[in-house]
Image 1 (cartoon, rainbow, N blue to C red):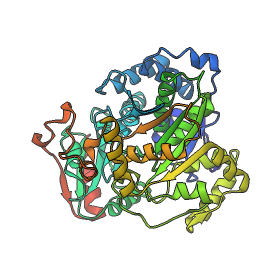
Image 2 (image 1 turned 180 degrees about the vertical axis):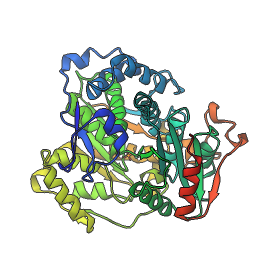
Image 3 (image 1 turned 60 degrees about the vertical axis):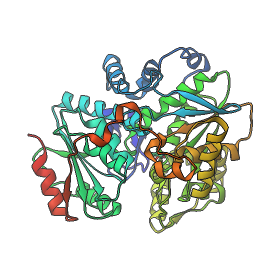
Length: 465
Ligand SMILES: *Cc1c(COP(=O)(O)O)cnc(C)c1O
């Protein structure tokens, strides 16, 4: 399987190169040249498979020609052995035909583990095969950093450096990162804000000459296709559990960078009978404005109680545009150029196609708090702020009560005690057993000034030989 850029000007690459590459050379994102499709009979035959067995069926077609099936199976098995629940992504019922898909059973209690546990193993596999080493640099305001660190802590050929703004992430989030003390893991608390961290990382990607000879930077953010690929699996797993493909199924997805819900769209293209795909946003609502009013314009970032969805623009939406415009790379390049100056407008045909595929809803912090309280009062189940937004969006946009609605739970409530307390809980939600000693563990973290040279020197001198 080859991969092509959404802007049509970069060379097509094989799967393994796409995993190591990040952005395409024309600024686009890589997508598979063709999306594999499965018959209803074939999908029906997957009904009894374990999560890992199903992952092998779903991912094989995307890596065909690059990774032998036995190796892929081994990568999948190792990646999901770190999850606390045998089902990997179990479901809980919260209403009539309404389900919560718990994607937070991995090591850092957020759905990003589903993709990043796999990506870490995959990177190490590809790098060893090629006798190559890479450096990962990332900036985080919380979730992504810890999931990336957990994904890469056992990688022999990866050194990972994660920058977070000094004293501006929560204690749980910081400790999830800094208590990983393997010698290829480096946490940098930089004296600045999140944007300073992100800008420094971006500049480092643009000029990598500070790295030791033979090293390059690799990206683990959601522009990496392998993350999307790993996320497609749970749409199939959940759908099969409620009777698909004989039955249609709908999903509501707390959305930030559009990686998660894009995986749902790909599952639909592959043959899963998806009825509704609901884009649920907080007050950073560019996608909701786009679907409802064709208003895809940048607005100032708002800090909300669902911080993992605080984005100004959704980088993976470009992949969706590529499909809406029938894979016309030149048109996508033009639209993204428009967007640089602040906004872009979808064509009429594309907008109506997007509206057929997606419903959307936006929720502010106050309404979100009410949802956490409401779900708890009705079924004694505590949802985190991101999940709450998805639940309410599902309830507000649902067209057909006969179709099971699956709300993706993207984080464990213990990661967001502030919101949970505001919703009337007397105590902080308990951390799961494997993390109950988080506050007793040793921390390792470097506090550095907001100075590109200082950070680069630190990175260069701490890469393993
Ligand atoms: C990253 C994240 C999201 C948003 O997912 P995208 O793929 O960026 O749309 C939602 N909820 C939580 C808890 C997250 O960590």
